[in-house]
Image 1 (spheres, rainbow, N blue to C red):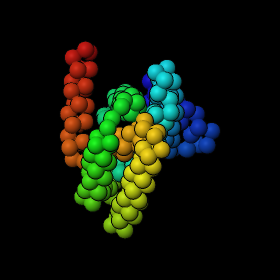
Image 2: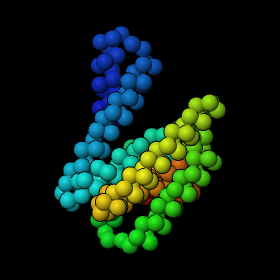
Image 3: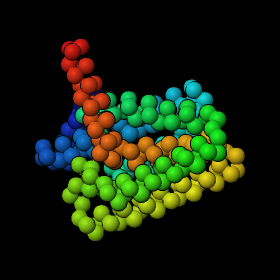
Image 4: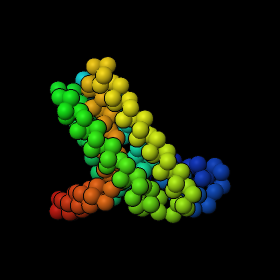
Length: 207
């Protein structure tokens, strides 16, 4: 549905600008990403508002997106599956962040996130991801440096929020960063790849 709408708009734009078929596909792809992202945010924040998780969701998605954009990671084979899983993950993080947890749990999560983040940045980011496999060494080093900086900033903010007693924001940051990093690891690719395959097989059975 989204693809059809994007192609229809792209055809109209290309017709007005007298562009060729190749340009139509480029416009359609860009429009699909733009419309899809806007739709995803609207649905996400609407659900967050309904479940009284708006602020936690906002914090989690900013942390998650900042890491995800830099690091890349696996994407599911259809936008609907990607949208559904993304919404569920962020809302799950937001809900978990409202639960009470001890200082020991906080320290453990900080350590896990920091160690996993460092290892992932060194070993897999950004070259492991399919979308970033053609990046040259110079740009790859820049992405690694920026990713490391963002990791340190988010961990610092999480600690600050915790010391100020804003525990839900603190945990939402940790979970958002952890989720973004995990999707760029081989294990993240394996798990979500198998999940995607299972959902594809399930949809074929229904057809």
